[in-house]
Image (cartoon, rainbow, N blue to C red):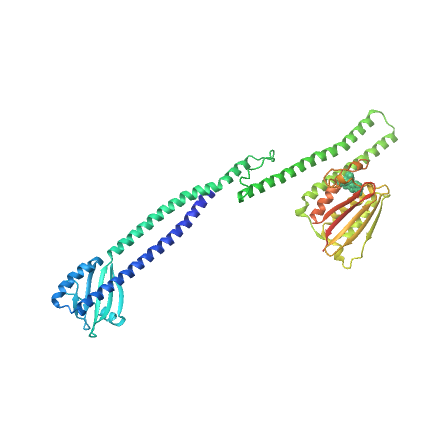
Length: 458
Ligand code: ADP
């Protein structure tokens, strides 16, 4: 079911309930008021008749006149009966003539006891009142009538309420559909625009309308999501093109080396040398492919990464060992600012293999980009975090390029003479992000750099 129809139906049901409650309240209040007013009038008429009979000492002859008067005065009320009984339950007056007039003695007794009774008999309303004359004689006066005019009025009220209800509901349905349609119109527009957005035109945005209401917010958020998607697509694209470029260069070098080697007959030693050079190039290629794999892996790592308490100092020593094992001329000094009171201060919730990747990258860079191939590592901590600083006295990073070195494949201009592919730091940043930490750099060209990794400890 369309939201528009749903809103219109819900709206109509609510209004219908309100109208029904309101109409019933009006109807029953009017009915109660009518009934009570008619009882009061019946009572007044009954007592008036009794007073006329007794106080004015109306004789039997005058009773006929009174009957006529009653008819004309009380006719308006549609009084059918005014009866008066003495204390022996004998009828002393009847407003109409009939052969025998009987009245339930139980009712007369009740009236004597309660002094006043209101009751009804089908459409007729009945009042029974106790009247005591100046001589102390008590009479029961019964007045009975149908409130034709009152009922007609009530019938009118009922008809008006029913008509208003039908008109009200019809208007509600029509207006509900119109207003719901109007309010949801922008959504229909957005829907149409979204249908036209494909992977190839992510630049297209949806119209945000008045930029104020919830629908505009939805459109705005959708546009922001498109922007994020676009950035991620762009990154993906540039990653693929950068990666293929990086792979193509060493592969092309390998190919030309082989072609040159095959051009002439070579001696055994020459072939040996050529194969050695090919091996070095292949090793570099493997390094590059591993770097690319790490980068791709770190992108998908977040959800299925196993985290467990991991000692940062141990990882640092492992990274030191690994780098020194590969490069005998490198020197790395690991230094604690303070000895931690509690092991927890140097223990983070992390993935050992990934953190090892971070620190081997940083140590390798520090040694690689400095003449002396020296790196200094300092560990410090506070109540919440463990901070590792990797310092070198190397070539440094130009200030304008500081923010770019964490982007995949970015290499600074002064690093072109050094081996590398610009992948390591982007992998580091991604891994540190996964560990909810941060990586920062301070550097000065010609003086050196300090990379600082901050991780929350246990
Ligand atoms: P790679 O070192 O393989 O090129 P990285 O991603 O590790 O790739 O580093 C990206 C760039 O950042 C490097 O090419 C280099 O320009 C710069 N860089 C990283 N570490 C240092 C450092 N310790 N000193 C100077 N430049 C650095």
